[in-house]
Amino acid sequence: MNVQKEQDRKKLDDKVLTMPWYVQQFIDYKLPDLSPSTLLEYIRDYETFFNWLRAEGLSAAPDNSKVTLEELEVLRMEDVVSYRLYLTTRRESANSKITVSRKLSSMRSLFHYLSQIAEDDNFYPLLKRNIMAKVEIKRIHKPKDTAAKLKGKILEEDELLEFIGYIMDGYAKDVANNKQALYAHELNKERDACIASLILNSGLRVSEVVNLNVDDLDMNNKMLYVYRKGNNDETFKTPVYFREQARDDLAQYLTLRQSRYKVPKREKALFAALPNGHQEGGRMTKRAIQAMIIKYAKRFGKPYLTVHKLRHSFATDYYLQNDIYKTKEQLGHASTETTEVYAHLTDKTMSEAIERRLEP
Image 1 (cartoon, one colour):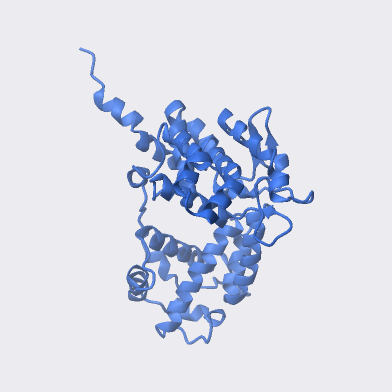
Image 2 (cartoon, one colour; image 1 turned 90 degrees about the vertical axis):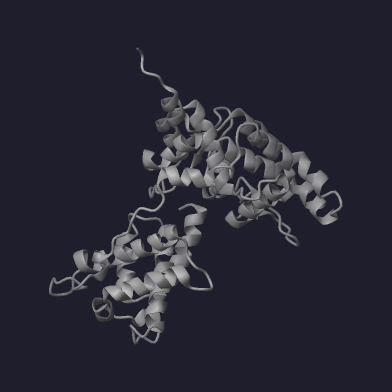
């Protein structure tokens, strides 16, 4: 199991114990098909829902683990409407339409399982009445809408190389008066530039970068082997190609990986960090990589740029030279529907179509 999945599986095992027995049963049912990361999000959604149920007096349970099936069976449509309203208007952290749609969808999955799949000792459904079956969840983020939101928030054309160069050299000039920032940059610039370069030249997800080991690299063939999202076969790593630019940056980083980060032989991680006060380096975390990219992006003049938008930047650039099917394979998408975002971002198809003239 890859590093991120191991961490999320531990969190899932702890969190699921705070849930009712039937939720635990549902999670066990879904484990073969969904990743621990996805199921952890399910648990968080159920935690929010059960907390709300108890706060509204719709459940008499002293804690979430005691919420009963009978209390779910007598929920009315007005209760679901109230919950949706709560999600969109609560003061501490109102949710976007996409988030609300996802939270309701996870509730539908649970209620469907309880009413259509799970059975009691007498072969009757665990849930006799499914209020969530009445809830229509509209598709919120169409590829064209997602593309519109990304416009101006990703790197385009020459900016891909400029951003990597900025991490290596430009950032130091901008923090010249900050000795602490300057020292940290001098220590990590090759590694940081290499991470940005690898994503911008392969389209890897941040979780895939975190999970990379040194022996996953095939420098001669400009290829690496990764655990792709949604692939639950823990014995198989997918080959992913990267561009020449990334090979040069990887080669430079690898010459100093051990000496710079004091990486012990037992540590297989490709990208390492050496925390203050530690004698040995270890695998970089997902959060550290995300924070690192945001730090450079703000100084670069792209405050909306995130590590995931680096992936979008690569994908947009890649799609300009390739078709949608090659782009889908390179990014590891489950369907071309997700990849359609980049068709709209480049406007390659639409702009050609509108200029096309019928032959007389």
